[in-house]
Length: 131
Length: 131
DNA sequence: ATAATGTGTAACCATATAGTTACATGATAT
DNA sequence: ATATCATGTAACTATATGGTTACACATTAT
Image (tube, rainbow over all chains, first blue to last red; front, side, top):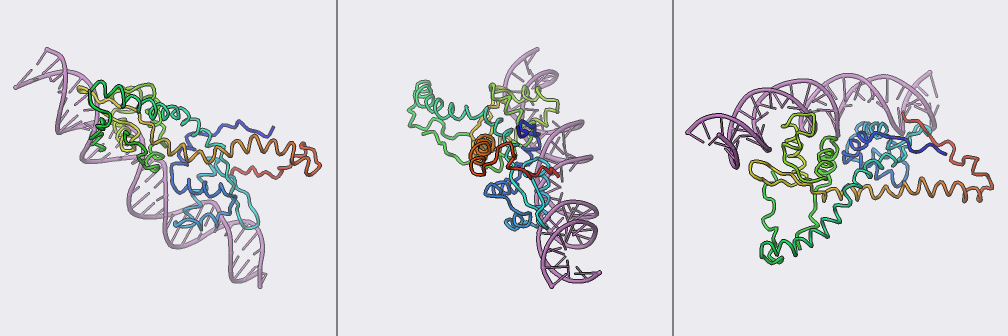
């Protein structure tokens, strides 16, 4: 029963994934394991910078590493991302609701309430202060 | 056609969602819009701290705000989270593959191909080294 | 008008981040 | 053994973050 159901820290995962470079590293590893050097070569930043990102990814258990001669090969481990997926799961529902029901609301209810035509773009001048 | 398909910055979204407090705020708003004060009341940190989190969430378009008397009501806008969802989408596959197909592969295909029993742990030398 | 309420912002602080260069270490090639 | 290659770590820097307190501003209550 190859140990699964291991609990990773969602905290570490969200944090690891917050950085665009680290996400790119993961995306890269999705297409196959790579050595640290090769990975670094794919980015505009210095090699040590990538090395630090890898350390963070390692600690978040998003990658595994094993030596191979004088190389260190990194392998993707997507497991921890399930935490992120599960969190968003709660919001997936909303998209459907918002895009379907809301659209419906805007085109019918709202129009009725205001007497405006839905074609009049009722949400015009929407949110100005993005501030 | 209520403008949708608006493009939010995935960058801002991932960053906004990286903080546990902000995720909690979003989770809170999932159960209904709340005034800034009420939201702040739900957390152990100071009100200004929450105010800053709200500003960040606002800038990431994860919440909308409208005044209501002397209150400011915040409403959840899950749209930007789609970017996160889409990113993880690429990894969802892996879970299935790793846990289901691979298991299956190991127990059947592989055994058939090699004539070995699946109990022979064909994936040995798995590499555990967490660092 | 004056006080009280609800909220955002400014200024400040400590810590975390991401990047850089210099250096240490282990493995392979000569 | 010595040079070279692959890679991680240390030290340092600049900027970003998250939190705090003090204060400004608008709206409602007296």
